[in-house]
Image 1: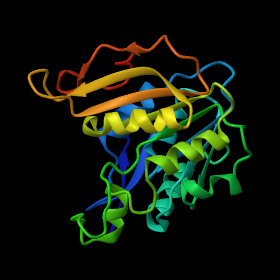
Image 2: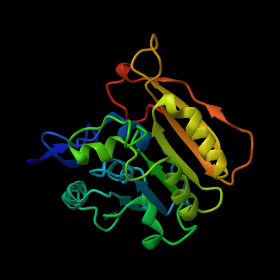
Image 3: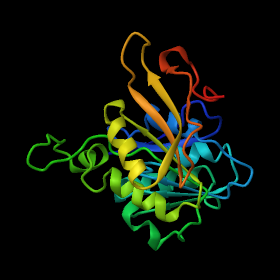
Image 4: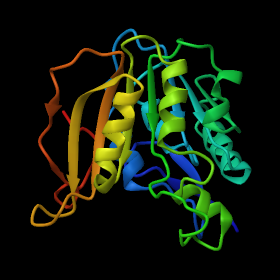
Length: 237
């Protein structure tokens, strides 16, 4: 594998290291980062399953908050570190080579203002699941090293009370995601569905849920057809 330095979509000046054959940032990460609402008092953000750090890099254009990215796979972690250094953001972005399940070893409980996550999308059953022969790709796509419940537990431990968790995921798992959020007392506050065409089913959903939030005030935002947008910056405004 050869690492290459690319522009991070059309974010002026941002560069990102990727391998030329895999582990490239995806549209999902751009949509997730643009979906995040930054408040004036946001001081600390944690991005789980950070990959080569597209979400922390994009968020750095929206806030001066301290951003932590957790990436389990060492090779991908190294790409993320290179990208942070390339963009001279070491003082604001800290990439940690660890599973999100171990986040309390690095982050104080109830100290975080927002958590973001673009997790593996597919369930894993070692007796049934067909996974990529490349184990690194398999971990990125399947819930081998973490699952939805692990995400909710980790987020609940580190988030401040009433602070938000932002997730991008597949629509066919929305019911399960909502059940899991409810189990750990997260209240969904905003949903937005992503389409490749309004004539077809939604391809993704963006979710904002708050820790120990109150029932009510759920907003279902206008849908986004990604093929109609030349730029994804600002499409949620």
